[in-house]
Every structure is written in structure tokens, then in C-alpha cells.
Length: 253
Image (cartoon, rainbow, N blue to C red; front, side):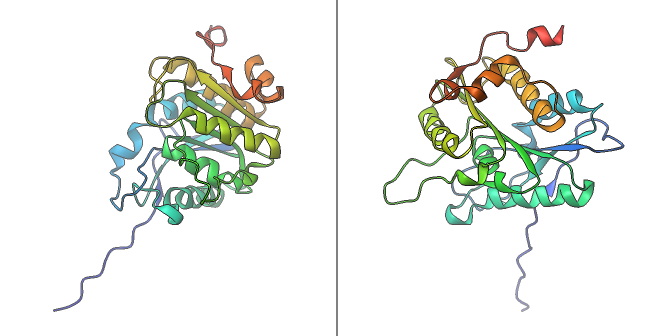
């Protein structure tokens, strides 16, 4: 009997939501959530579900600017320890954007474990900004090295976390943001009061904040006053900035 050959898994970019711009001048890579350990391959439906709303919002906002939006389809569901598969796939995706579109600025926008991947892969030279929503981060262990932050120098970074997140401890994202702020002043963090892991209670405000940050960091649109203030404020003020109810409403009128 012939020996079975295990198929090689490959990471790929999903189709852009809506019509793709004819001339691309910036790109967002959407990094879905994942699991701490898993060798399963995520389905395309599973991969797109958690980032679909964000992708549609950003694609619509950036269409005239030439924004390409793609979800990353991972090889594995799991981070898988030192393999850091999701971060490696995110780095590959940035390389693929450069191959397809040339020298355009990239924003890595991740949710949950995908937010950890965005932060970890943020050191790629094509990355201009990182958006981390409800990031999954490992518990701090004196025997293990802390989550790295030096790769974020030179990028603008926004972390958003619900104060009632029962899956990903918001205190861990605050501590990471505080360490990152020492190496890079362009780091801020918003707290969504009483919201949980999926940030459903203030979904419209979170999406408006994401749009404001992405369009500002990729295309130079003026950032909203709360984001400007959060970036400029010293810790802990700029790292515990409350997301106001109704954020973005006035801009949509």
C-alpha cells in the first residue's frame, strides 16, 4: 500500500466585501479569533463570521480612498504555543498584500486571538497601524517571557476592551498597553464600560471608533478628538479612555 501524504495547509486571503477598488492605496487585514491550542482547520464561514461586520463597515468607509479589505483564512484554529501559527499567518498575509498591491500601508485588525496575532505581527515593515479588539493574551507567568511589544514601535496602536469581558481579562490588555507605551507613544486603549467579550452592547460605537482609527492611520483623515487625546495622554489616562455612548454619531450625520 502506498503511504498517505498529508496535504499541505496554506493560508489565504478571503474575498473582499463588496466591489474591490480599481486602484488600491491601502489595505486592512481582518484577523478572526481562534483557540489557544487546536490543529483543526477553520472553515471559511467560521473565519469570516466574527469580522464580517467590521469588514463591511471599513470597506464602505474606504471605498473612495482605494481601501482593500480581506479576512485572513488561517491554516489552524489554534495559536499552538511557540508555533504562533496565527501570527505567522498574519505576517504571510501582509507579504501577500505587498505582492498584490505594492507598497501600500496596511492595518492589522484582529479580534480575540486574532488581536494577539495582529499585535505580534505588527512589526512587519508594511504595517502602519494595529487595531486589537478584545485581545486574548496569555496569563502572566514569571517563568515565561512576557508578550513582546518592541515590534510595535513606529506603528499606531489602538486596543479596545470591554470591562466585563469574561473570556479575555481586560487587565492583561491594559498591562500590555502600558509596556507598549514605553516603547511607542502612539499607543492608546479604550474601555467599553460594562460590555462583554463580543462588544455587542456598544457595537455601533466600537465600529465607529474602528473606522475613525483605520481611515486616519491609513489615509491621513483627521482622527476624532477622543483618539487624539488618548494617544497624547500619559498612562494610565490614555490607556483607560472610556468609549463614550454615541461615539461617531455626529460624524454620520
